[in-house]
Image (cartoon, rainbow, N blue to C red):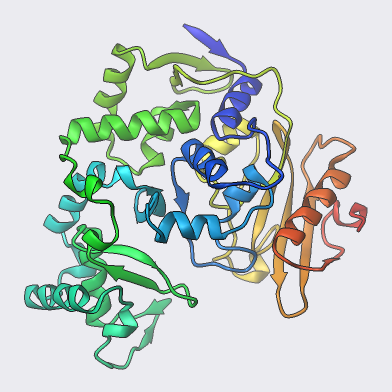
Length: 392
């Protein structure tokens, strides 16, 4: 059985995620498609303190690009991506829609606590209304019932609950989002290519095998837990899928230095001699979203602190790891202050053993990030050991 050092495993993982691909001066739709093929999905999140989560992994790999590329891919024909609960809420390639039908059926059969009170007649009428109106937000269909704020979130209107359930079941699809980031729902026939809608539904076994196959390609090397998490699958289905791919020669069992669990190397994974990456990574980047994997690969303990009370935060509110070469060498708390046109560096911390050039390289990457976000200045707060070394 092949054995990989931790550093070799890091290089495999980073190459699989596209960090060996050359950055183009002007990324094109072809560049976008290549990058999406590496990541597989782009997690969507509403936090906009710096930039929406789904835009950041593309910048980390492609460099400065026109975000219109993503909107075109998601909203213009021929649609290349569509939102669905693929990892969590995420953009995925449209050809995964048939693969996700078993997941849609699961939500239809098990409404759970979120949709148990949604009336069947309401579901039918809401879908009919969307079919007649065209792409609609929940606000468009809202019956005007006042919303109450209880505990940590808003109570949804009945129309919103119905829309969400219909989306999870595949009876509606996401046509796009408006300027307030509200989802615009529409019938799948107006969102997805006909070839995708007409494609046969694979068995649960075949669908799971395809998702594990894609997760393995995006990870390069991974444990069963890593593979299961990428598309949030059930362990009872993932284990036989892994074994099937091992038997077919698509996955090779390997051991990794310091890992107690067995791992699997994708047959197309590359092991480069070096990785010359330089990127800030969103908290929702596939490289770091499975925190145990991040710690084992990079010896980097990482927790997002958005939901932590300010007085209990260790590193900051929206903290991004800084990848240099094949190591995570720092973390930086960032905010885009759009009214003043300034990228705020609220804190910056070097990791143990960070190389001498960390501050200089981070400063250069932050300049590139600020320019991409159309921010004209960078302001550094003197918090963290790396902050005083940043020069702009």
